[in-house]
Length: 80
Image 1 (spheres, helix red, strand yellow):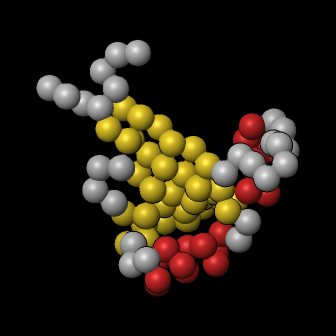
Image 2 (cartoon, rainbow, N blue to C red; image 1 turned 180 degrees about the horizontal axis):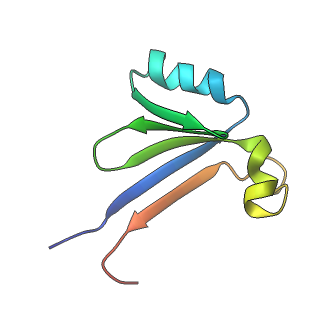
């Protein structure tokens, strides 16, 4: 069985509420929940979420580089 696929995508955003409104109201994605700077949408197969960029230092221990990081993409594979 081929299990290779994109498992999740998380975009880092500067304004979580505005971004939720965009993906929900303009892109038409079904909103699932939001908590502590994180929001997730109901999708089939691949998880799509948003994370407040201002909370990154607490998550990754650094401010990041100028302009980034912009998000995360995880791939599900059988073996590396």
